[in-house]
Amino acid sequence: MPRERILVVEDDEDIMELIAYNLEREKYSVTKAESGEAALAATTKFRPDLVLLDLMLPETDGLEVCRQLKSSPQTESVPIIMVTAKGDEPDVVTGLELGADDYVSKPFRPKELMARVRAVLRRAAQPAPPSDMEIIKTTDIEIHPGKREVTVKGKLVELTYTEFQVLYVLAQRPGWVFTRYQIVDAVRGENYPVTDRSVDVQIVGLRKKLGKAGKHIETVRGIGYRFREQAK
Picture 1 (cartoon, rainbow, N blue to C red):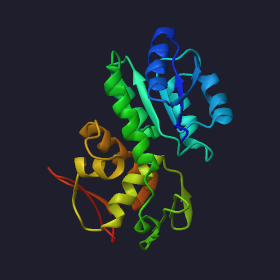
Picture 2: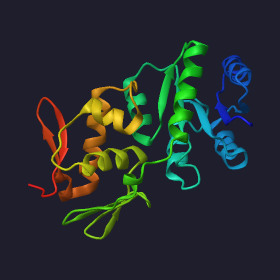
Picture 3: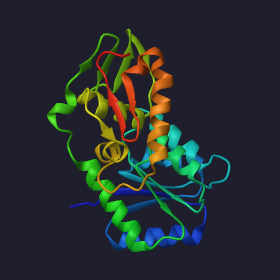
Picture 4: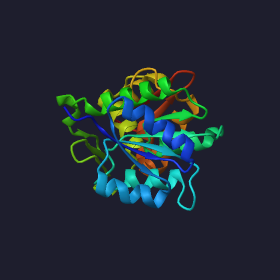
């Protein structure tokens, strides 16, 4: 049985070879790209099942590559694991905001990286439950999971992959209070390494894009968030 195709995007040759060696030892099919431009071209030709993406790339950086992949209908569903030496939380948060699925900080242990790869591929292969196809409607918002579209009073609202997922998780159970970690578990899977602040960033972005309809998302002080069918 052929294994999954993985695109490794890394401008440091030694690190690229280390990652490729460990992936190939696990029988994955590997293609390499040393720049953002090469990565974008490779996704069209190679059609990977997963992208391991360094953030510090020449010219087109990893965050821009992530943004372009997640904004294209042809590649938005391809999972991305960010590989970064940068300790700045804003870069990690921005990547998750754009739709990246996980991240690994350099220096990393090969066993840890392989475990993350297996976990992300496993989640990506899981079929969506039937309930995920239910359209949710309020007086002013309509959420269509099959089309991955959100409209407010009939006008289409452009959301990132993660923003859509957060909104849909909350809206599926109106009135229920979700902690930040419950939101992360529902959107990304259990034990996903993410900070409270990244959830707050998603909520801020959602409210801004939804405009007045953003009032459907209510902050429950000290706990988390909930979705109200009737906005205050």
